[in-house]
Every structure is written in structure tokens, then in C-alpha cells.
Image 1 (cartoon, rainbow, N blue to C red):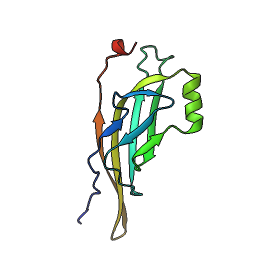
Image 2: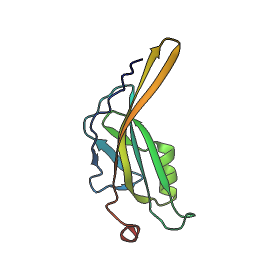
Image 3: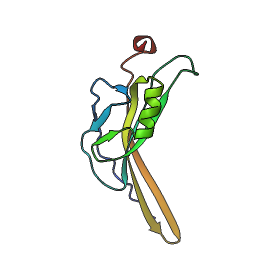
Image 4: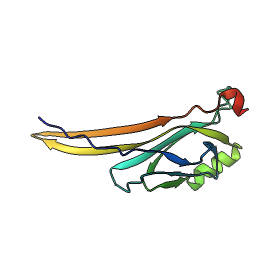
Length: 123
């Protein structure tokens, strides 16, 4: 059996350039594919050392080149006075193939990780 894996194109988050995130942040990236089988993954947090105060976010967005938080998410982040940083971002590509009586679902993910600020520097 031969299996062809999908290709996840090179990815670079271009905005926010400083990786700082608020409820109103517009995310943008290079090489948007607009392909139905590609998504962009963006995650981060406010880096608060107290788990009760920490706010995490993880977004799965269409690979169109830009993304903003949905309205309900924005309102929640505003209510929490959120200010944080992107810690990981990347692109995932998925594929489906049939081999005899098997349906094969495959994915390839290219993630980048950023730790440009320590928890102490964020506060």
C-alpha cells in the first residue's frame, strides 16, 4: 500500500509582529492557501502564574490569510481584560484516501513556537 501525505505549506505569522494579543487583534500570515483541507492553528495565553487567573486561547481558522476572534470570544476576552501573547502557530493540512476497504485520514502540521517573553517580562 502506498500513502501520499498532504503537504502543509511553509507558515509564518506576520501579525501581530510583536506576538502581543488583545481581544481586538487581527492575526495574519504568509502563504494563505485558501484550501478547504488546510487550517491555521494559533494559540497563546496571558502567561499568568496563577492558574485561576490564566487565560488560554487556541484557534482553528480557515487558511485565508487573516483571522479575528469571533464576537462571543472577543466579548469574553474583553470581560477578562485579556492581554497576552501568541505561543504557537502553524498550518495543518488534511487528506483522505481509500485503499481497498480502508478509509485513510491523514494530516501534516507545521507548527512554530514562540517564547520571546518570559512570564516575568509579561507582568
